[in-house]
Length: 479
Image 1: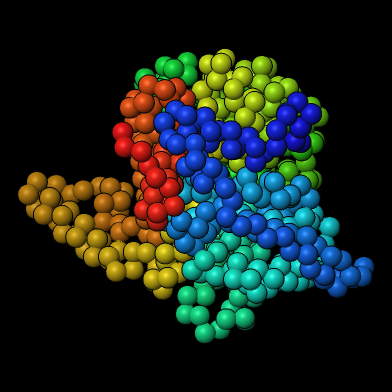
Image 2: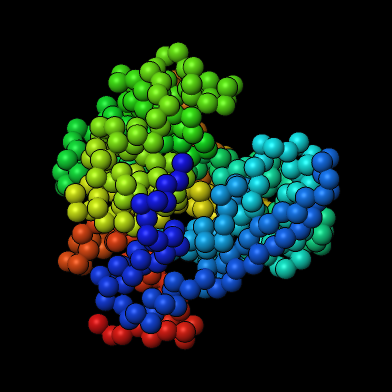
């Protein structure tokens, strides 16, 4: 789906240009920007695996953009489009995301050139385990230094295989569960990790719609309910984003775009039904409850209130940016808008909530999972029943004072102690709210910043610059 013919720069170069723009707006020294942009280390790994069809040699990468805080954290991607340039760019985005969300991780990213659908389950397990062993041998899989997570083409299943491989290699490591995040809940994972990015997109939009002045800039009003939404991608991010927005926020998901085309219904799609059809057939074609067109990329130009690209990078580029007809772009994917498209859209006045803010839900809940693994205790275990007893006491006092009985449904809600999922969602909501307010404040404080992307990058590079300054690597000029 990626179209590079209209672009004059690579994904990595585009990310660096965005850093340059933010550096200029923040008044930072160009030398400091060079330090921030530099990728600390990139390792290419080639390893053979004996499969049914014979021996096959696989190529993968692990890139550490910044180790100013450890561990370095990043998704592990299985895709035929994986390259060193993409891996470096995504590792840089991870550094900036962690800085914006106040997560004490450095940025990293891994990738393996592979189409997972072409292999039997046992073959895929052997390939994943072998890749994990290669990473572990070089100390690039470790709870204290490098911690992968699911990404495109991987899931909790692959993370379980990797964790099991690490445990076999290092049985004496008491924190072995923390070597990866995004694991199954039964294997040391945490509730809410699978849908974390989609839930984070929902929380980001909730916060955006709490500010009438920001809505006015985007030409939006009347709250989130009823807004017409187009979503590209029905994978983990796109599906959960569409599901929560449609079911809980009552938006109209009027179009969903995938590899084989787009389904459209001006009255709103049933997201669950679309997903079920997609899972059964491998595509959108043949879905009976909506119009279908094979021209998926053209649907990005459909008129809507909110456009959410949640698939691959570089989907909105110099070739189609002039045709985008939306009030607000919300970047669920990593790098879905190229640097050149961003310049065009900003000149056109299209408001964009950037990827380094919008999709931090994944790394945020991964942080919670990592911390939970290190503590060896589930969240809420110490206080949940205490909260229930306290709620019961409050209700009894209220009923004694008023002489009236609280309705059963309200009683259940008041006395219920927070579950682990409640606490995870609360922490994610707090992170998305706080990060948006920081971005908004940066725009108010600096007259050179006029858009959310530049504001987000300014916050990220200032935090990274401060870390490097504390380590004596750069000098920060006095204001």
